[in-house]
Each structure stands twice: as structure tokens, then as C-alpha cells.
Amino acid sequence: MKKKESKKTNYFSCTFPAKSVNEGFARGIASAFCSQLDPTLEELCDVKTAISEAVTNCIVHAYKDEDDLKKKKITLKGEYGGSCLKITVKDCGCGIEDIEKAMQPMYSGGGEERSGMGFSIMECFTDKLAVKSKKGVGTTVILKKYIGKVSEE
Amino acid sequence: MKMKTYFSRGNLVVKLDGEIDHHSIKEFRDELDKMIGESRPKTMILELSSIDFMDSSGLGLVLGRYKKLSEAGSKMLIKNPTPEAERILKMAGVDKLVRIIKQKDA
Image (cartoon, rainbow over the protein chains, first blue to last red):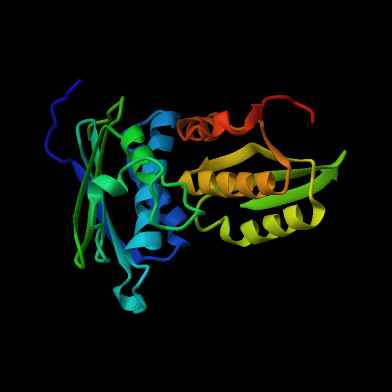
């Protein structure tokens, strides 16, 4: 079911180092922002999980060959208009060579301790997932989710 | 994340508390593997009733330990997962490999 998107009524943007300790931090920010839309617990859990997957991908994959800590940054942006929450996770890492292959369930380029379910979870827990990537430039993941209740202010 | 472990009737019981993500599992993964290697339990019971959050890194933790236990001839059970954890486990088909049990007492 397609819902009409209205203009964004609130937004945020932040940049932080691609350190694993910031996975929980990113979830916390996204969760606090999403809470303004009065989500159900399940919707909030979906958003937190999808953001966690996107941010973990940046840390595990995007900067795996980058030694310069100053270059290892993740930008997290959020906005909503009406009931549509849009979260963008951007890195300036190595990029994804084959997006289609990377998005296949159980595929992982991160070793045997990775389940390869990151993109599948992002797809399943959101209403729309878009991935843009250029080798050597970086990757942008855009997640959209419609939240049931809306408080317009 | 916090991890409590104890032995019960030859089984290794592992109780995880808090948030399971790529960051939090780092310090526990090796400890868990060491315990599995040294104790060779009949079954490892992974108790997930106090988990606040779990993403695909948690799946990696479960599947990685399942593989190690299988190689050692041991079994794995997942006990009382939260609805959120169970949803992710089932999405990845973990329930087809590992028995998920729901009960109040072990």
C-alpha cells in the first residue's frame, strides 16, 4: 500500500567515527528520532535493527582496508514528513562492487562469523531500501519506513 | 552485553543479557569457544530471554557456535528467545538447524 509522502517536518544529521562502539549509539539516535512518530514497539525494533545492520556494514566492510582513522566516518541522517521515516547511512569506504550479489541472503564478504543476513533484515524490516555505491567512493543506504501513528507538530 | 555460564547435567548453559551486536559479541565469542573446546558439553543451551536487542551479528554468533559444537559432536538448544530474537532466528532459518525451546525451568 503506497502512502503519500508530505514535506519533511523534522530532520537530523550527525557524523561519527566508524567504530563498533558506535553501533549502539547509532541505534539510540535513530530510536530517539523515530520515537517522535509514536511508533509501536515492533516498529521501533524494526528501525533499530535496520540501522544497526547498515552501520555495522560500514564498520565491517566499507573501511576494512582503511588504516587512517580520520577517514573512517559514518554519516547518519534522518527525516520524516507525515508518517514516512527516512534514514540515510553513508560511508566513504571501499564501495560495493556487486550490489545485487551483496544483497543476496546468506552472502557475506566478511568472513564466516558474519551471517550474510544484513541486507535481508534491512529489506524485511523497512518499507523501502535503496543502496547506492561506487567502488572507491563509498556507499549510501536509504531506509524508509511508514510509522503507524503520527503526531504532527 | 553480559554473559553468564554454568554447567547442568553435562550441559553448558549460556545466558546472554542485554544487546547482542557486532561490538558486544567480540569479547564473549572467544571465551565461549574456549569453554566449548575445553568442556565438550553434550549440549550447549543458549538462553536468550533477557536479550534487549539482537541483529544479524547475533545470528553469526549462533551459527558460528552451532558449527563448532557440531564439529565436536555436541548439540545446541536455544531457550526462551524474546519475540524479537526469535523473529530474526526464524528469518535466517536457524530454527531448522537448532531446536528452540520455550519453558520456564531448565
